[in-house]
Image (cartoon, rainbow, N blue to C red; front, side, top):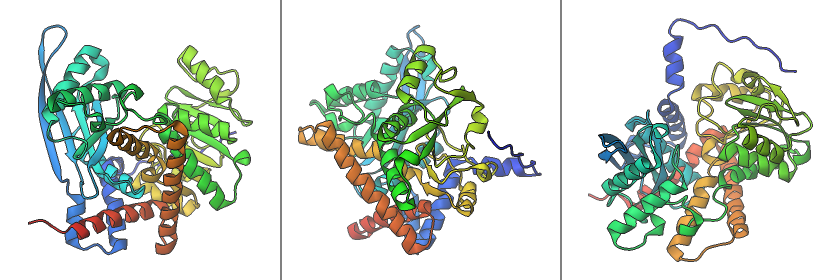
Length: 433
């Protein structure tokens, strides 16, 4: 049974406060400020770390299927190239903004640094609604966008990847277009490609597997066992679905899955493979014979050992964080917890595995793909998974050691570790003038 809780009343000015709380750029800046202060970074270094290295806005004329000519706007931001080429996804959505792309590019800088891979942060986007466009129109948008970015991206410059509403087919189009301009095949220009074009084995499961690996480490730290650990997962897509499948197979008791259209619960543990089959057949997780349908709004607050939000940002806020009943919060999604909720989680003693660590499995295996493409030698899946585990375990230990040493929570420790690594690279390289 789920405990009821009232929502705090909305006070005058609360609307603006909530809007600010839900702004990912402001949340990232607040965490950056605290980490920079803890590190004692001077104002000049803080300015360098805050400021994107390069930004590009392109306007893409595309002939639509009905003969109309339309112009789409595209962005690519390279936040940092101090530790290596920029790295980050390309998203297609009607509400993509330059501000959003800037914030996500910075996020990628810190994510790559926290797992200590030799990339900086980048991000891109095209303002469009993929649901209203045919595959042929999406291909034309992608190829023209890539042509406009030629010279701005490349295996040693900036390596894009799939993101919201893009996939391995999108990456194949980008790789082909770039290669045609370069007059030679350049597989390493993007990651997240089909395996037949130089993609890496294990890439599809990488983010979910990374979430499981760091959760394993949290269990060891807290003295818990997989078989006695209840897990609630929000989201049943690539990250949440893979995490659920892998965790159930490893012996975790996945008791609840929350999706956009409902939630399914079984205190003895859900059969994730059967639930996936049910969703494939019916289009929904609801009505599953192996569980009970419950209210999705309440499912987040079930008593559990691990809560894994893997759907969207701003799920846990200052208005509901007090209702969480979990020991471990593993952030599979980007930004599922607002900055204002961090203090509440700390007061409740919840062990938080922050997003820039928890979901870094994807970018880590993207790095492996880039390495394999440049070598022209490809690893089997076991090798990929073993090397992923090594990176994630080491990174988890680095973050908690930083937290213990500096007396901060895991999120601020992850930011401190990232900022320190990027700042060190900048100091060693010096400022070219």
